[in-house]
Amino acid sequence: MASIFGFRSRDPARDRQTDVARLDRLAKLFEQIAAEIDAEKTGLESRYQKEATNAAFLVEAMENGSASDRRSSEVSALTQSILNSERRIAALARQGGMMRELRHSLDAVFDENADADSPAAVESARQTGVGRG
Image (tube, rainbow, N blue to C red; front, top):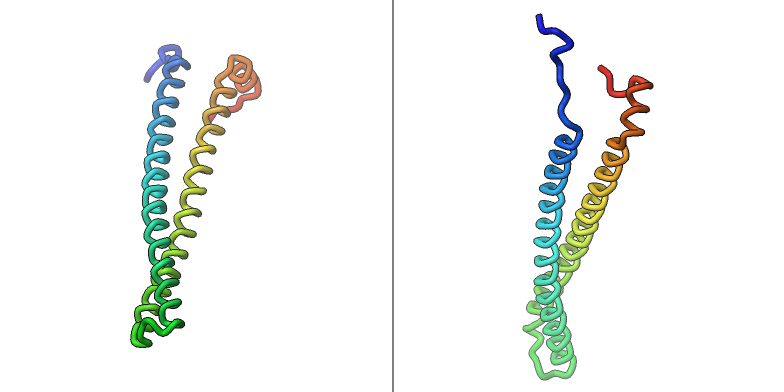
């Protein structure tokens, strides 16, 4: 049977280092994913602009009679592609917003932990029995 007097807790500074390192890795992951989302969104917006411009010129040419009506299937394909792009851009915007929210929430967790690690908070928890199993 182990003596309860032999129990030693870790240094709070070491716990804080561990927490900081863990939260830093998670923050970097969120930032990496946000960068991937932004890169995809930027590329898609560029292609979207080109398709919208092409569709506009094609429709104008058809209306002016300088392009055949057979090209209407091309307009339909461009229209569908534009709609798909709009949906994807909106989804990427939502994902990017979520990554920013998650990243911000990490700061809040870190701030909560910093407040909870203060000597006053530790003493208060000890006196009230918070954290005991």
